[in-house]
Amino acid sequence: MSSPTMPDQLADGYNRFVSQRLDEQKQLYRELGQGQSPHTMVISCADSRVDPATIFGAGPGELFVIRNVANIVPAPEAYGEDPDAPLAGTAAALEFAVDHLRVSRIVVMGHAKCGGVAAALGRAQSEAGGEAGAEDASYISRWVGVMAEDASKAVADNPSMQQDGLQQCLEHLNVGSSIERMRGFTFIQRAMEEGRLTLHGAWFSIASAELFWMQDDGEFLSVEA
Image 1: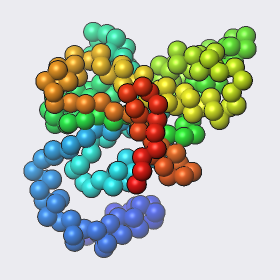
Image 2: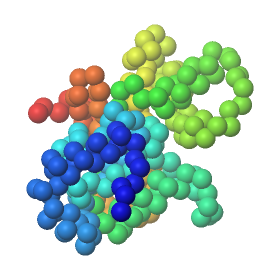
Image 3: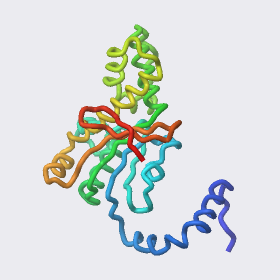
């Protein structure tokens, strides 16, 4: 039987996995073949530079990860009563992680130089400057529109801040707001009341590979390695 045709980059990567890692992980994969029991759910950006498993040094089966543009968690009311409502993928993953996998914690992890955050910030700056702008019906625009209130706040509260500072400010606000919106889901409220779930925020600096952890007051402090 001939081998399937694969892009060389992916085939080479799989070959490295088989030759360098599989021998020591064969038993682990046999066990994972029977089911999963991750301890943590991570909601992170789809950005290729920010991989939760790499950052947290996690192996297969340890993290349940959902990745989307700008690590956004929409509010429960975004779904309404329509099972086919847009934005439902993140809510479905949350429900599965909390009620079926029973993870112990959920971490929302933002990162520096986030393109989704930049899009929301640019729109807020245009509106603050009196530019109406053309109506954008793209999927990206509708998705990052969840950040509109935070983006406007970042711009209004920091009129003299440089662009990089505004970007980071909104990246931090977005993490905190996603956590707050999560608290609106009934299944998350129930799990927290039962004492089996905690919610956390983090932010990753790509250039320095430094992780920052969100405190109760919303401040992000560097994690000492």
